[in-house]
Image (cartoon, rainbow, N blue to C red; front, side, top):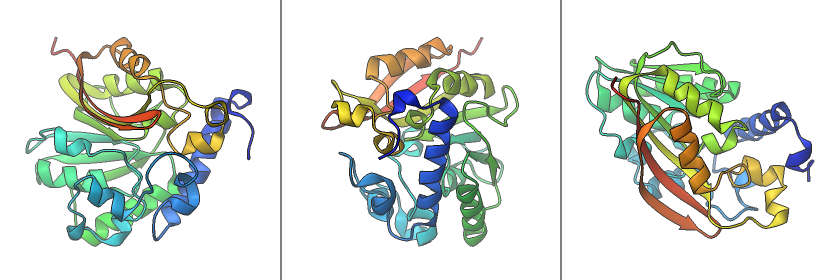
Length: 253
């Protein structure tokens, strides 16, 4: 058991997350022996991707084995051909590759992840699939390596709960979106109160639980960043946490 979260700096938390997801990148089965099985959430990997209605049969195992999402943001995003899409916390690339097929050769999808091993795995997966309209960049979602107002759509799958400063992450998403751009997120929020042992646990944090906000706080953080028409499109309750599907827009003017 590591230090309790309230005794850790933001950088220490990020290093713990990076260490955990480095192990996930190396996993050949699921995240069960690295981050998921001692908290009230699902295991990861191909089985989870299949349950969330990804077409895993068309993907190499190396794309899905490190999957740790809690939803399917591309499925709700209504992507159009030619659009430029950014995936916050892109992991081994599953959401990037699904989005890339929807935006077509005239479009592009950029994945940003702070774990070098995930970036390397995603690049190898892109080569396996022969997908050319994708790019993977090493970076922190609190300080994105992306130009201002250059994206049509931002997506993210069970990642923003892992960053210590959610407000900064949402402000960055707002910054990189073009006017009228949209954001689609699947993420974990808190329902009620976490047990004390879970709330203070860095192990629960890296498993997408104790770093999550209460739903009202989460939605307010998106609005505080400048987004409008912020809406919960669906919810799956999992005990004292829930997986929410969220849609938001950057004002057109």
